[in-house]
Length: 195
Image (cartoon, rainbow, N blue to C red; front, top):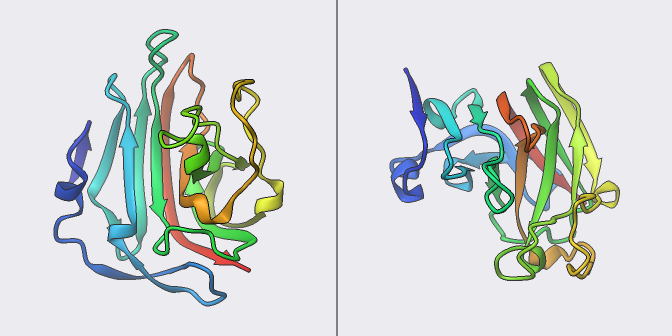
């Protein structure tokens, strides 16, 4: 049964979550079990929606469908994002990340670093990279050295680089335009951080 959700409190969405047998790890070369409580999503309050297949994390992986509305005006942009909260709240010594995924759109992989977020300069111009769309299961390994800040980064946002201890989450964002919005289906089977 599919559910369409605009916004619900995170605690309500994660209530009753169980540890599921899926590959996932932080700062290790071996996958551990994925905790559903490490995963969440967010959508803007302007009309974008997320649709789940009963719950976000299931035994066979994550499946989520996003419908992003176009940007409202110059002050109010729309957004959709699948979020992996790092269990240790830091990248530690990790140098790269491997994800096994499907995505109907190219996928932006973004490091959520407090220096650029609401506790920093509020630019939200986080370091990121892009992986291609994939209609079948694809495994991609990307080095954090290849991540860059977006071209729209404000000039008044100081670049302090990637500070591993300040990165608390990895965001997965279907590459849809602000102007047009659009629809995307995203699935993730595993994530592994590597030293």
